[in-house]
Amino acid sequence: MTHTVFKLVYFLELVLISLIRRASVRRSSRLSRREDHSSFLDSLLTFLSALANLVPLVYVLTSWLDFANYDLPAGIGWLGAIVFACSGALIWKTHKDLGRSWTPSLAFRDGHFLITDGIYTYLRHPLYSAHLLWGIAQVLMLHNWIAGFSYLLVIIPRTLVRIQKEEKIMLEKFGDEYAEYTEKTGGLIPRLNR
Image 1 (tube, rainbow, N blue to C red):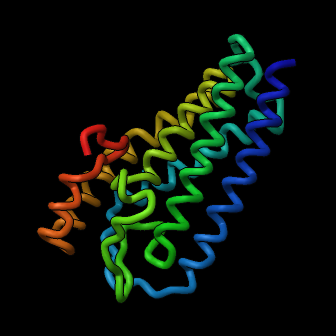
Image 2: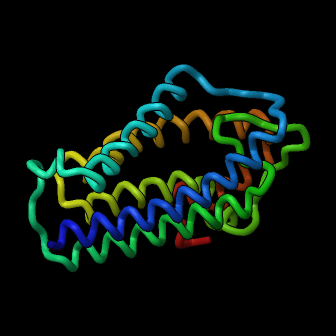
């Protein structure tokens, strides 16, 4: 019974997060990109993370993966629901603060400037933090060896690759302004000694 409850809660939270993301993707697709720094590896990892998002949907909507279920206390699932809600809130806040500067790939637009306010006062990579929280939440909510871990296993390497490349690109684009910004803010988690 608890598997069914958390499948439903996961699905509802996924729908909400997808609506937030869809609005940003739609807005982004209407704007032109001037510089795109995506690589084959980045595109491949993005594609794999999209595929990894399908695995929990298969689990939630069918019984095909139920053979890989395991049981944990319901409290862990509810903790996962809270972490997933925090992930969704962080995704929303990140898209709100980035506005027209957000792109789904490593790209710049005409008039792109360094954003250092809002959530970016505390984190340089809040969207990656949100996706890592999403992966953790999925493990906590979906007590299934395949569906629970699928996203986390892909999002960790994707995050490491993207952050490394993004930091380099931002230093090239914004120079000392970005270097000073990195000294004041955390990457994936906020700095305690700001």
